[in-house]
Length: 104
Image 1 (cartoon, one colour):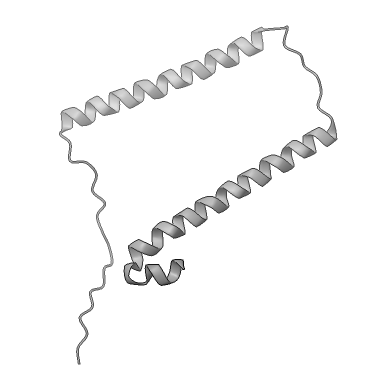
Image 2 (spheres, one colour):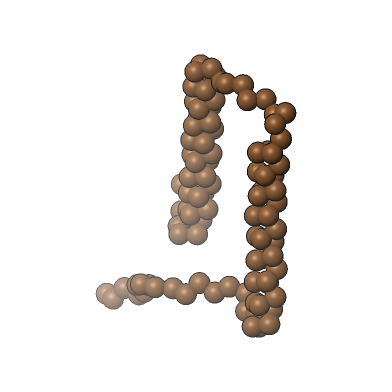
């Protein structure tokens, strides 16, 4: 008995169907936003380097180690949460009939 199976080897991801004028407008808008963000960051870095009143106190080795440990711990937790969320989205899309069994 023949099976009715379709093998998909590629797919095309379609975005919003916008005209070329809207695309140029959006490109300009996002480019302008990105440029302003870079300028703001440059101004902040320039003001920090020009201000001699900012304290330059050294951080102890224990403080540096603690800060690095906490940063890496929270980064790992964030990556783990993203993996769980990705799997939670993958299951109903790729296995819709088995979703309730897999989740429970």
